[in-house]
Image (tube, rainbow, N blue to C red; front, side, top):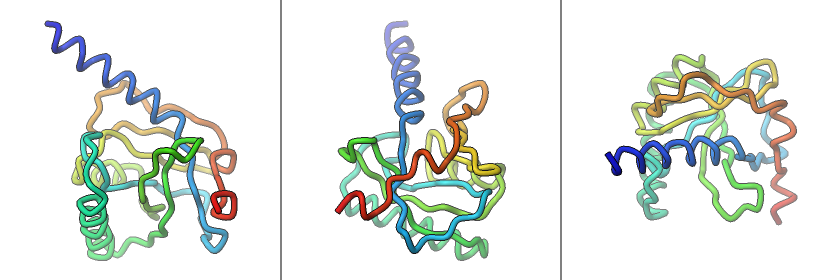
Length: 146
């Protein structure tokens, strides 16, 4: 019973943290109004070494190429940049985004629909996506991080 309660609390904590994510986007990057943001880093929110995360993201890129999906790199991060995960803006549907996120053991992913950012559950069993506002308000340009 206590273990289940701890697990429930951890899921709620993660869901809250995911809602605070910002994105480092290169000025060279051109994004459409509709795409999904997915990483292969830190499966099930378990921290891996940078080498393992890089290998997982390489496999994600191979999968995207196999599916003929357009993608561009970006970084999902905390507002203070203390936590960062290499990620990809992928031209795909929300359904494809969920499938890919589950395939790469991600609790959640982001969808940008009509320029609006949505937190989408993947492995987590949250009841509904959460609207996080305009995507542009979550962007930290790469010149801001230098």
